[in-house]
Amino acid sequence: MRKFIANSPTGQWRRLALGMALLLIVAGATLMQGLPRAERHEKRHEIDRLELEWRQAILQGDVNTMSSLLADDYVGITSNGTLQSKDETLASMRSGALHFESIQMWDRKIRFYGTTALVISRADVTGKAPDGPVSGSFRYTRVYVQDDKGAWHIVSFEASPIRDHGDKHEQ
Image (cartoon, rainbow, N blue to C red; front, side):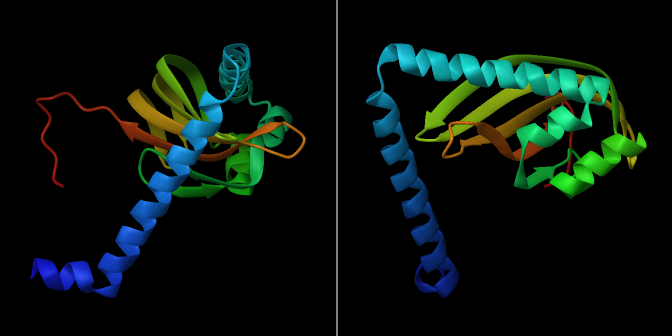
């Protein structure tokens, strides 16, 4: 059975996708390694600043700042698995359906792959979303891409609730 899956079109696509992902990571890491240390530090500092800018914008309901940070083709995956476009995210903020009272971000790790920055962090949040209250600890991934003019834009976001080791859930 394993041989059949590996030679199936799905298996071939998975191998191709994995190979391409590895190639992009290696190429991006090589590009980042080629940057002078000061430039790498500057890029990291800029992403840290953008993360704080995003936090302030979402806490204050600053839709204009949020709009400038989000890429036009942005896709967010909420903690309950709902997909949201840039327009849907901004509409939720404008209407008040998405509102955060507090966001504490910590344990941030930033990696660069060429003109892409990957942020993995933890956030403790309290607020409400269109489908009800949001409260708890989450891990999130936010992906920034730098455009031709050097500006960074958020292209993707995904949040996952952190469960205690004792919590049981189906997979």
